[in-house]
Length: 260
Length: 254
Figure (cartoon, helix red, strand yellow):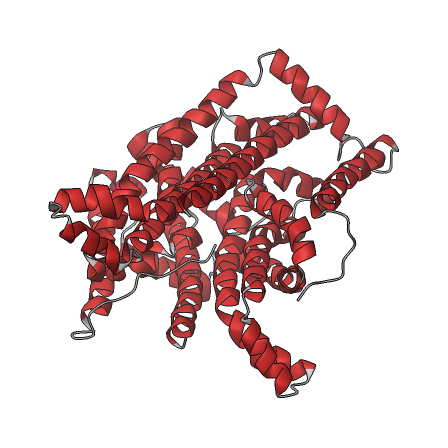
């Protein structure tokens, strides 16, 4: 389940691609701005207005968005943190042992493929409405891509490297930091990128169903009273954080790919 | 390095884990350790589900979910392969779009549902729209990779047989890229199913996902669990079938 990038561009004129990427973004914003002044404009805030209200809502004197953002992102980060801890432990354990991998891999892949949001009522029964229900959704959305990618990474560690490490009499700590970690770094980052994205997704989806606060809830409530500006400001904040986080992991991924 | 593990076949341990998990739920529920309002026993879930199927409660929701899933998947498949080929032919344009393509999952597209309601109306179309966007991503990425990874010798085979450009594409390159495209389609279908059920759960008034939501609202825990079970069975069966199909295809080609 490795995400693989689109590669191989002629080395000359390397600025073309980043410039094109920026251009695609600019065109998207222009289209958004056009939509805002079109007949559909009554449900679309202009980009400029959305940015203004987003900034005012987070750092202004009357921060209407801030508490919701704190709620959403703290649930996502706690869930993501737990998913990293569990995902790493399980991924390494299953990557090392072919036997337990044969036992657990089909179960894990099957669980990965279910629409986890429909399990949310069960978590609501257990935790009640509030932070921990959202954390549990972040966790179960994020943990599977991390397990699967770490497991694949550990499984595919080149045995020659392990033998080289042994013949240099590397101690267990050195084996982990010098042999295993560099080999699995790429798969780990792919897993973390997907886990991060899915954690935020899990929180926001569950907020739409039942929550006390959070960006998902704020967006729906502002839409209900047709406060389109705040709604777009909250969507923008959500997208900016999710996009930035994803992009950071992705750039790290590209770097790691480049070094091999 | 061979490991010294018990001689029990992994499949047996696997089934013991699954059966054990179900048995624990059964005991927790039947023994009154967990209240009925929180968990009903697996045997009751199956019985309730059977009753709902016989009473024809499931049919309209099943049809709705399948129509939305397959409609989204069909569009994502057709468009995704075309875009994937385009991004392979024009690699530079592909690279320009790449950061956005890989970030689509990070974006909770469901936030645009209110807007889609205005453009596409109530019912299935907004769901199909969001599902198509989610399903198309692995299809685009895998198609591009599939064509890029074709070995040079294939191009030589085509030219030494004096293939026309269309023959080169349809008889040589496309078949060579098929395993990757299939992987993309497999992931695309799984995503289509997950997103459809998820959207129904949150937003609509028909579909297998919605039924979980509705019975939650009715405090009908038994029927709610029956529908959760049905959704899980459908998702897991699709997953297992697609993985088997992929395995069989790879075996055939080697």
